[in-house]
Image (tube, rainbow, N blue to C red):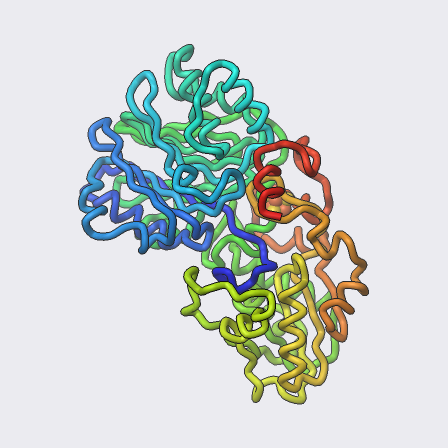
Length: 478
Ligand code: SF4
């Protein structure tokens, strides 16, 4: 990810991991490695909780995984099970209180929870809980989930029953890892909007947002958690409670376009293959005479390779990203933005001079950075710059955990394709069709949410500008 380089790009959501040790693994270290592999899903905060004979120890803070943990902290976090979380805030402020895992006491001990996703009825539920006397420590919707589980445990026979009751109340997207006094539990919302998979490391089960985290700890992929499924991992092994919801699942298609790592598999489909396929289809749908195909680093690279494969136009590097510009890079003022772009991204003048270029990116959000890139390529001597986007025009906000701005800030929502072309200064502009996009996750065993392109949300969502928690946050940022 660009870590602030692309200020008009989408922001990631969160990543979760969990391990129940039945061998001699150091669970804190395993979680640390897995969080490293999931860092692309969230860079604002990181945390982990371990269960040491029913007592939950945890550490979390703002920053990247290597900034938050060190040897001393990891050595302190000893236990039989662990969960970890990396966060980008889509609901709740970017503060330590909102970082995860969230840990609470309940009737049978402690619970720790890590959540990826976003509830669309969090405000409503929170208000009801507050009226009933609940006190919240944070402003994020994950605490609402934890609170509901805790409350339902008072009238349930088991934690599993409390979770099922919670799942009947909440609407939205969630892939969750939960530590109880004696279990590691994973669950996925009934539409499976966010990914979650199961792996095996020796005799120890692990759960992770993406299969790349299983690879990082040396675990073997077993299967994805099914939409609506609750998996319970304990000394008795892995048990499952499946939802009887019969709706078609709706995995977020943006996981394939941008969020997930290319080396991950989600619900049976390779992210890398989907991006190659998106490039291929883009070339079929929108061919253009040119000399070189380049990708916008890093998000457009794989699709650019696919475009080149299909069109026969050579692929080359035209833009170089400075990989050492991290979060601490002082954001340039508006007046210094050009300098900022050059520091973070440079054009390979000798590779593109005098050439007709096709540049591929995964999406255009506000259009500001795309405009700068096109301008930089032309200034460096490109004869023509043809922009091709490996997803359809993004016109609608996301309510399921991705920080897509309000429609007013989405350039494709307020402008025609020709107007966007003029704005970014390209010689031509074309997007992949929705039909084309939905066919790219080859072998996927799921349906997809594509609401940010089509406006067809898989459930009732709050109107833009409503007082939903997520919207409050978004309005605060605008
Ligand atoms: Fe993903 Fe878009 Fe659906 Fe949000 S609206 S879950 S980003 S496909």
